[in-house]
Length: 111
Image 1 (cartoon, one colour):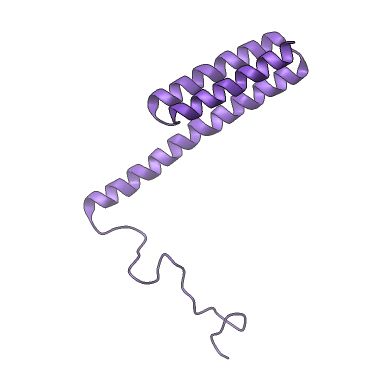
Image 2 (tube, rainbow, N blue to C red; image 1 turned 45 degrees about the horizontal axis):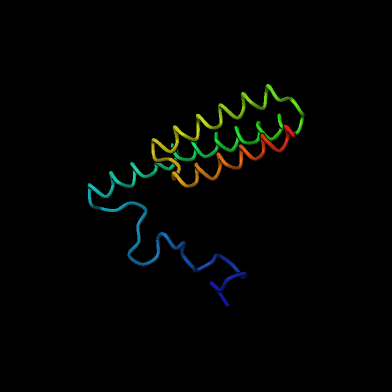
């Protein structure tokens, strides 16, 4: 069968181009919203990724038994999470949960 899947070029088009869906909207304000949302996604990704990095550093310091480095890592993590919540990059409940996890990690390794 010519054109069937597996025997030659596929006849199924990518979902973004099939039907009435296009890569960009054709309303000027919606084009701006798409660009803005892409920038915001990148910025929020930076906040989340850095928070994960700070948490990893705290875990490594706590596992290593270095309390001074663990304290510094905890302080940096809490500060970063508070800034992320203030900016709206992370939800306030998510920040509270991660701060509690960090505190438990810090106190568990101390005793």
